[in-house]
Length: 401
Image (cartoon, rainbow, N blue to C red; front, side):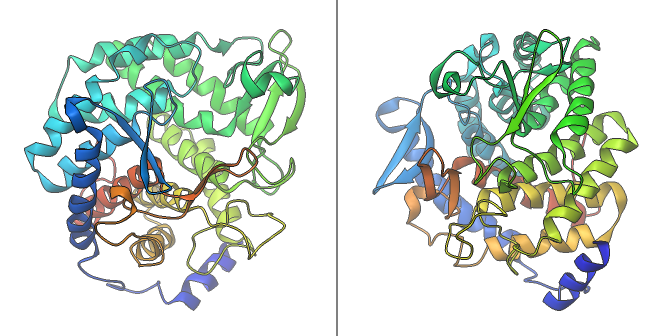
């Protein structure tokens, strides 16, 4: 599969020195300043802080604090501050971050890692806001209440509420949950309490063991018996079929094991991330521009939506993976994705798209939710990828610790 990736890159002409648009980072920063300035104004209309999630039917759509995507816009504002150095972005980011203060006590939500680390975590890193430590650690404590010791995993969704209650699950765990482990690893660093780190390691180990197929694609959902640890079933919730490869799930896994290696230096996690790269970029249904369809096995390919969010997540992870390994193939893949996402095919014209940067993402086709629209997490990971690309090309670390 590695040779397949090399051939793909050679065919696309991306294994070269200095290829691509030399000013692509500055160009994207200038574009993002226009777009996110408009979105920020909409989010603070009438003096009230609101959380923009998507743009649909000519309107910016907002979500409440407890929605799983609530931290991404604050995180994007922090990245704008990092990319520009303009304090206006830091001031707005701090306001939108502290709007999420109560999330630290939320225990029914596994995505508090996304919600708090992308907001409070970035604020702590970029402005040295040590008062954010308490929120980060308290959120980790809340997330830790979802740990099921017999199964060794963090339960993702409640099994007795909403549409999940109709599936007959006991302890559903989704691949997305790998992303929330960053909060736990960082909380252990801050507090000196290894409980959080140990939970993250246990969850990572169990996910390698039970979530991945022989070809290193991942199931979306694994249902555990939380009392015995037994596997009750493996299926999908947002993919095309139980045995398909839902695109965003593959990207979550790539990113999740890359960050797990960052914090632990456990070679198994690095190898897992590398195997996932091989699966994604050797897949015969991956388009030449490296922006995947919403599911690698969607029966309607090529007449089915792409998912830009999956591409942005993968690009960000690939920059870090390159930094860890110095494997030029990883950076070439990430650079190609950034080139694609910076094109008119995926990046909105200024003054359009409700202020969101990227078009053509997919939330959940099975739930008829957010199909072929901009999504705040696509923008977040795109900006993060730009930060990491610039850091590397300026001789620094992709992810300064």
